[in-house]
Length: 351
Image (tube, rainbow, N blue to C red):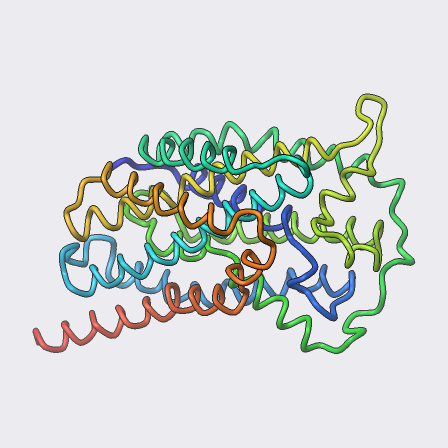
Protein backbone atom coordinates (compact mmCIF):
# COMPACT_ATOMS: atom_id res chain seq x y z
CA UNK A 1 0.00 0.00 0.00
CA UNK A 2 3.03 2.28 0.36
CA UNK A 3 4.26 1.74 -3.21
CA UNK A 4 5.33 4.82 -5.12
CA UNK A 5 5.24 5.58 -8.82
CA UNK A 6 6.78 8.41 -10.81
CA UNK A 7 4.88 11.37 -12.22
CA UNK A 8 5.50 10.06 -15.73
CA UNK A 9 4.04 6.66 -14.85
CA UNK A 10 1.03 8.22 -13.15
CA UNK A 11 0.11 10.56 -15.98
CA UNK A 12 0.76 7.80 -18.52
CA UNK A 13 -2.05 5.90 -16.82
CA UNK A 14 -4.31 8.95 -16.87
CA UNK A 15 -3.52 9.75 -20.50
CA UNK A 16 -4.67 6.29 -21.58
CA UNK A 17 -7.71 6.22 -19.30
CA UNK A 18 -8.82 9.66 -20.54
CA UNK A 19 -8.23 8.57 -24.14
CA UNK A 20 -10.72 5.79 -23.50
CA UNK A 21 -13.49 8.38 -23.05
CA UNK A 22 -12.74 9.94 -26.44
CA UNK A 23 -12.52 6.60 -28.25
CA UNK A 24 -15.92 5.54 -26.93
CA UNK A 25 -17.66 8.90 -27.13
CA UNK A 26 -21.23 8.76 -28.44
CA UNK A 27 -23.14 11.68 -30.07
CA UNK A 28 -26.05 11.15 -27.67
CA UNK A 29 -24.13 13.26 -25.14
CA UNK A 30 -23.45 16.15 -27.53
CA UNK A 31 -26.78 17.43 -28.83
CA UNK A 32 -27.03 20.53 -31.06
CA UNK A 33 -23.27 20.77 -31.50
CA UNK A 34 -21.40 20.73 -34.81
CA UNK A 35 -18.03 19.24 -35.78
CA UNK A 36 -16.25 22.59 -35.40
CA UNK A 37 -17.82 23.09 -31.99
CA UNK A 38 -16.65 19.64 -30.90
CA UNK A 39 -13.06 20.62 -31.64
CA UNK A 40 -13.40 23.98 -29.89
CA UNK A 41 -15.01 22.56 -26.76
CA UNK A 42 -11.82 20.62 -26.02
CA UNK A 43 -10.18 23.97 -25.18
CA UNK A 44 -13.08 24.94 -22.91
CA UNK A 45 -12.85 21.54 -21.22
CA UNK A 46 -9.16 22.18 -20.55
CA UNK A 47 -9.93 25.54 -18.92
CA UNK A 48 -12.77 24.12 -16.81
CA UNK A 49 -10.59 21.18 -15.76
CA UNK A 50 -7.84 23.48 -14.53
CA UNK A 51 -10.32 25.61 -12.60
CA UNK A 52 -11.88 22.71 -10.66
CA UNK A 53 -8.49 21.23 -9.72
CA UNK A 54 -7.02 24.48 -8.34
CA UNK A 55 -8.37 23.78 -4.79
CA UNK A 56 -6.85 20.28 -4.88
CA UNK A 57 -3.34 21.49 -5.69
CA UNK A 58 -3.69 24.42 -3.28
CA UNK A 59 -4.66 22.00 -0.49
CA UNK A 60 -1.66 19.80 -1.19
CA UNK A 61 0.72 22.77 -1.39
CA UNK A 62 -0.53 24.42 1.79
CA UNK A 63 -0.80 21.41 4.09
CA UNK A 64 1.26 18.65 2.47
CA UNK A 65 0.52 14.94 2.17
CA UNK A 66 0.95 13.90 5.80
CA UNK A 67 -1.23 16.63 7.27
CA UNK A 68 -4.31 14.53 8.01
CA UNK A 69 -5.30 11.71 10.34
CA UNK A 70 -6.23 8.78 8.09
CA UNK A 71 -8.65 7.46 10.72
CA UNK A 72 -10.43 10.79 11.29
CA UNK A 73 -14.18 11.09 10.72
CA UNK A 74 -13.67 13.51 7.83
CA UNK A 75 -11.23 11.15 6.14
CA UNK A 76 -13.69 8.26 6.51
CA UNK A 77 -16.44 10.36 4.90
CA UNK A 78 -14.03 11.38 2.18
CA UNK A 79 -13.05 7.75 1.56
CA UNK A 80 -16.70 6.74 1.24
CA UNK A 81 -17.47 9.57 -1.20
CA UNK A 82 -14.45 8.90 -3.41
CA UNK A 83 -15.04 5.14 -3.35
CA UNK A 84 -18.66 5.66 -4.38
CA UNK A 85 -17.53 7.92 -7.23
CA UNK A 86 -14.91 5.43 -8.40
CA UNK A 87 -17.39 2.54 -8.15
CA UNK A 88 -19.95 4.42 -10.24
CA UNK A 89 -17.38 5.18 -12.92
CA UNK A 90 -16.20 1.55 -12.81
CA UNK A 91 -19.76 0.40 -13.48
CA UNK A 92 -20.25 2.79 -16.41
CA UNK A 93 -16.86 1.83 -17.90
CA UNK A 94 -17.55 -1.91 -17.77
CA UNK A 95 -21.10 -1.35 -19.03
CA UNK A 96 -19.80 0.72 -21.95
CA UNK A 97 -17.39 -2.10 -22.78
CA UNK A 98 -20.35 -4.46 -22.73
CA UNK A 99 -22.30 -2.14 -25.06
CA UNK A 100 -19.34 -1.78 -27.42
CA UNK A 101 -18.60 -5.50 -27.55
CA UNK A 102 -22.28 -6.46 -27.83
CA UNK A 103 -23.14 -4.01 -30.64
CA UNK A 104 -19.91 -3.60 -32.63
CA UNK A 105 -17.45 -6.43 -32.02
CA UNK A 106 -19.76 -9.41 -31.30
CA UNK A 107 -23.26 -8.22 -32.25
CA UNK A 108 -24.79 -11.69 -32.21
CA UNK A 109 -23.03 -13.06 -29.13
CA UNK A 110 -23.87 -12.89 -25.44
CA UNK A 111 -20.86 -11.07 -23.98
CA UNK A 112 -21.74 -11.49 -20.31
CA UNK A 113 -18.99 -14.08 -19.80
CA UNK A 114 -16.50 -11.64 -21.33
CA UNK A 115 -17.76 -8.95 -18.97
CA UNK A 116 -17.14 -11.18 -15.92
CA UNK A 117 -13.72 -12.12 -17.26
CA UNK A 118 -12.77 -8.45 -17.67
CA UNK A 119 -13.84 -7.62 -14.11
CA UNK A 120 -11.88 -10.61 -12.75
CA UNK A 121 -8.69 -9.63 -14.61
CA UNK A 122 -9.04 -6.00 -13.55
CA UNK A 123 -9.61 -6.99 -9.92
CA UNK A 124 -6.44 -9.08 -10.06
CA UNK A 125 -4.58 -6.12 -11.56
CA UNK A 126 -5.86 -3.92 -8.72
CA UNK A 127 -4.80 -6.52 -6.16
CA UNK A 128 -1.23 -6.47 -7.52
CA UNK A 129 -1.06 -2.75 -6.77
CA UNK A 130 -0.34 0.56 -8.42
CA UNK A 131 3.18 -0.31 -9.60
CA UNK A 132 2.15 -3.09 -12.04
CA UNK A 133 -0.65 -0.86 -13.34
CA UNK A 134 1.83 1.96 -13.89
CA UNK A 135 4.36 -0.32 -15.62
CA UNK A 136 1.61 -1.60 -17.90
CA UNK A 137 0.62 1.96 -18.81
CA UNK A 138 4.21 2.87 -19.73
CA UNK A 139 4.43 -0.34 -21.77
CA UNK A 140 1.13 0.35 -23.56
CA UNK A 141 1.41 4.08 -24.18
CA UNK A 142 3.83 3.99 -27.12
CA UNK A 143 1.95 1.26 -29.09
CA UNK A 144 -1.37 3.02 -28.43
CA UNK A 145 -0.13 6.43 -29.57
CA UNK A 146 1.62 4.91 -32.60
CA UNK A 147 -1.58 3.07 -33.55
CA UNK A 148 -3.56 6.28 -33.21
CA UNK A 149 -1.03 8.17 -35.35
CA UNK A 150 -1.12 5.39 -37.96
CA UNK A 151 -4.91 5.55 -38.17
CA UNK A 152 -4.82 9.35 -38.54
CA UNK A 153 -2.23 9.02 -41.31
CA UNK A 154 -4.48 6.61 -43.19
CA UNK A 155 -7.40 9.02 -42.81
CA UNK A 156 -5.69 12.18 -44.11
CA UNK A 157 -6.76 11.59 -47.71
CA UNK A 158 -10.41 11.31 -46.62
CA UNK A 159 -10.49 14.69 -44.86
CA UNK A 160 -13.01 17.16 -46.31
CA UNK A 161 -12.86 20.60 -44.68
CA UNK A 162 -16.24 21.48 -46.20
CA UNK A 163 -17.78 19.30 -43.49
CA UNK A 164 -16.76 21.89 -40.89
CA UNK A 165 -19.34 24.55 -40.06
CA UNK A 166 -18.82 27.97 -38.44
CA UNK A 167 -18.30 27.99 -34.66
CA UNK A 168 -21.42 28.29 -32.50
CA UNK A 169 -23.61 27.43 -35.49
CA UNK A 170 -26.42 26.44 -33.09
CA UNK A 171 -25.42 28.92 -30.39
CA UNK A 172 -22.78 28.98 -27.68
CA UNK A 173 -24.79 27.28 -24.91
CA UNK A 174 -24.62 23.71 -26.34
CA UNK A 175 -20.83 24.05 -26.69
CA UNK A 176 -20.39 25.12 -23.07
CA UNK A 177 -22.74 22.36 -21.88
CA UNK A 178 -20.77 19.77 -23.85
CA UNK A 179 -17.49 20.99 -22.34
CA UNK A 180 -18.96 20.79 -18.83
CA UNK A 181 -20.30 17.30 -19.54
CA UNK A 182 -16.82 16.29 -20.68
CA UNK A 183 -15.39 17.56 -17.38
CA UNK A 184 -17.98 15.46 -15.54
CA UNK A 185 -16.92 12.39 -17.50
CA UNK A 186 -13.27 12.87 -16.56
CA UNK A 187 -12.94 10.83 -13.37
CA UNK A 188 -9.19 11.39 -13.64
CA UNK A 189 -9.64 14.70 -11.79
CA UNK A 190 -10.92 12.76 -8.78
CA UNK A 191 -8.09 10.24 -9.19
CA UNK A 192 -5.55 13.08 -8.99
CA UNK A 193 -7.19 14.37 -5.81
CA UNK A 194 -6.39 11.16 -3.89
CA UNK A 195 -3.13 10.16 -5.56
CA UNK A 196 -0.55 12.55 -4.05
CA UNK A 197 0.56 10.01 -1.40
CA UNK A 198 1.85 7.49 -3.96
CA UNK A 199 3.16 9.76 -6.74
CA UNK A 200 6.72 11.10 -6.54
CA UNK A 201 7.89 14.16 -8.45
CA UNK A 202 6.32 17.40 -9.60
CA UNK A 203 2.64 16.51 -9.86
CA UNK A 204 1.61 20.03 -10.83
CA UNK A 205 3.96 20.18 -13.83
CA UNK A 206 2.89 16.69 -14.86
CA UNK A 207 -0.75 17.75 -14.59
CA UNK A 208 -0.37 20.64 -17.05
CA UNK A 209 1.55 18.47 -19.52
CA UNK A 210 -1.12 15.78 -19.24
CA UNK A 211 -3.90 18.31 -19.76
CA UNK A 212 -2.21 19.73 -22.86
CA UNK A 213 -1.45 16.35 -24.43
CA UNK A 214 -4.86 14.78 -23.83
CA UNK A 215 -6.60 17.97 -25.08
CA UNK A 216 -4.52 17.89 -28.27
CA UNK A 217 -5.24 14.20 -28.85
CA UNK A 218 -8.96 14.73 -28.35
CA UNK A 219 -9.02 17.74 -30.69
CA UNK A 220 -7.19 15.76 -33.40
CA UNK A 221 -9.60 12.82 -33.10
CA UNK A 222 -12.64 15.10 -33.28
CA UNK A 223 -11.09 16.91 -36.26
CA UNK A 224 -10.86 13.69 -38.26
CA UNK A 225 -14.31 12.59 -37.15
CA UNK A 226 -15.89 15.90 -38.14
CA UNK A 227 -14.08 16.37 -41.46
CA UNK A 228 -14.65 12.79 -42.59
CA UNK A 229 -18.14 11.95 -41.33
CA UNK A 230 -19.64 15.42 -41.03
CA UNK A 231 -23.29 15.35 -39.95
CA UNK A 232 -23.33 11.57 -40.53
CA UNK A 233 -21.36 11.15 -37.29
CA UNK A 234 -24.52 12.08 -35.36
CA UNK A 235 -26.10 8.81 -36.50
CA UNK A 236 -23.21 6.60 -35.30
CA UNK A 237 -23.14 4.88 -31.93
CA UNK A 238 -19.32 5.03 -31.80
CA UNK A 239 -18.12 7.55 -34.44
CA UNK A 240 -14.40 7.05 -33.76
CA UNK A 241 -14.74 3.34 -34.45
CA UNK A 242 -16.61 4.19 -37.65
CA UNK A 243 -13.88 6.42 -39.07
CA UNK A 244 -11.24 3.84 -38.17
CA UNK A 245 -13.24 1.12 -39.89
CA UNK A 246 -13.42 3.04 -43.18
CA UNK A 247 -9.67 3.72 -43.20
CA UNK A 248 -7.81 1.38 -45.54
CA UNK A 249 -4.17 0.71 -46.24
CA UNK A 250 -1.97 -1.87 -47.93
CA UNK A 251 -1.85 -4.19 -44.92
CA UNK A 252 -5.29 -3.80 -43.35
CA UNK A 253 -8.71 -3.80 -44.92
CA UNK A 254 -10.02 -1.81 -41.97
CA UNK A 255 -8.43 -0.35 -38.88
CA UNK A 256 -11.36 -0.86 -36.52
CA UNK A 257 -9.47 -3.73 -34.91
CA UNK A 258 -6.74 -1.31 -33.83
CA UNK A 259 -9.31 0.92 -32.15
CA UNK A 260 -10.80 -2.15 -30.45
CA UNK A 261 -7.38 -3.17 -29.16
CA UNK A 262 -6.67 0.33 -27.86
CA UNK A 263 -10.12 0.39 -26.24
CA UNK A 264 -9.52 -2.87 -24.38
CA UNK A 265 -6.05 -1.88 -23.14
CA UNK A 266 -7.27 1.50 -21.90
CA UNK A 267 -10.37 -0.04 -20.29
CA UNK A 268 -8.25 -2.61 -18.44
CA UNK A 269 -6.04 0.13 -17.00
CA UNK A 270 -8.96 2.34 -16.01
CA UNK A 271 -11.02 -0.34 -14.27
CA UNK A 272 -7.95 -1.74 -12.49
CA UNK A 273 -6.95 1.73 -11.28
CA UNK A 274 -10.43 2.54 -10.00
CA UNK A 275 -10.73 -0.76 -8.12
CA UNK A 276 -7.25 -0.24 -6.65
CA UNK A 277 -8.17 3.23 -5.40
CA UNK A 278 -11.35 1.94 -3.78
CA UNK A 279 -9.44 -0.76 -1.94
CA UNK A 280 -6.73 1.71 -0.90
CA UNK A 281 -9.16 4.31 0.45
CA UNK A 282 -11.41 1.90 2.34
CA UNK A 283 -8.56 -0.15 3.80
CA UNK A 284 -6.73 2.95 5.07
CA UNK A 285 -9.82 4.67 6.49
CA UNK A 286 -11.51 1.64 8.08
CA UNK A 287 -8.70 -0.88 8.53
CA UNK A 288 -10.29 -3.46 6.23
CA UNK A 289 -7.93 -5.82 4.40
CA UNK A 290 -7.17 -4.83 0.83
CA UNK A 291 -8.05 -8.31 -0.48
CA UNK A 292 -11.49 -8.21 1.14
CA UNK A 293 -12.29 -4.81 -0.34
CA UNK A 294 -11.02 -5.78 -3.81
CA UNK A 295 -13.10 -8.98 -3.92
CA UNK A 296 -16.18 -7.19 -2.58
CA UNK A 297 -15.89 -4.43 -5.17
CA UNK A 298 -15.39 -6.98 -7.96
CA UNK A 299 -18.48 -8.97 -6.92
CA UNK A 300 -20.67 -5.87 -6.62
CA UNK A 301 -19.33 -4.50 -9.90
CA UNK A 302 -20.10 -7.77 -11.68
CA UNK A 303 -23.61 -7.92 -10.24
CA UNK A 304 -24.53 -4.36 -11.24
CA UNK A 305 -23.00 -4.68 -14.70
CA UNK A 306 -24.79 -7.99 -15.35
CA UNK A 307 -28.05 -6.23 -14.52
CA UNK A 308 -27.29 -3.41 -16.94
CA UNK A 309 -25.90 -5.73 -19.64
CA UNK A 310 -27.92 -6.15 -22.81
CA UNK A 311 -30.15 -3.12 -22.27
CA UNK A 312 -29.35 0.20 -23.93
CA UNK A 313 -32.16 1.82 -21.94
CA UNK A 314 -30.67 0.72 -18.61
CA UNK A 315 -27.21 1.86 -19.74
CA UNK A 316 -28.48 5.30 -20.79
CA UNK A 317 -30.33 5.65 -17.49
CA UNK A 318 -27.19 4.76 -15.55
CA UNK A 319 -24.63 6.68 -17.62
CA UNK A 320 -25.96 10.20 -17.07
CA UNK A 321 -23.82 13.28 -17.70
CA UNK A 322 -25.54 15.34 -14.99
CA UNK A 323 -24.86 12.71 -12.31
CA UNK A 324 -21.23 12.44 -13.34
CA UNK A 325 -20.77 16.20 -13.33
CA UNK A 326 -22.25 16.52 -9.83
CA UNK A 327 -20.05 13.68 -8.54
CA UNK A 328 -16.87 15.20 -9.98
CA UNK A 329 -17.65 18.67 -8.62
CA UNK A 330 -18.45 17.19 -5.20
CA UNK A 331 -15.36 14.98 -5.00
CA UNK A 332 -12.81 17.41 -6.47
CA UNK A 333 -13.29 21.15 -5.71
CA UNK A 334 -16.00 20.90 -3.01
CA UNK A 335 -14.21 18.35 -0.81
CA UNK A 336 -10.88 20.14 -1.27
CA UNK A 337 -12.39 23.48 -0.27
CA UNK A 338 -14.12 21.86 2.72
CA UNK A 339 -10.81 20.37 3.83
CA UNK A 340 -9.04 23.71 3.39
CA UNK A 341 -11.66 25.34 5.59
CA UNK A 342 -11.38 22.52 8.15
CA UNK A 343 -7.58 22.73 8.31
CA UNK A 344 -7.76 26.49 8.64
CA UNK A 345 -10.31 26.19 11.43
CA UNK A 346 -8.12 23.71 13.33
CA UNK A 347 -5.16 26.05 12.99
CA UNK A 348 -7.20 28.95 14.37
CA UNK A 349 -8.37 26.86 17.34
CA UNK A 350 -4.78 25.88 18.21
CA UNK A 351 -3.75 29.52 18.14
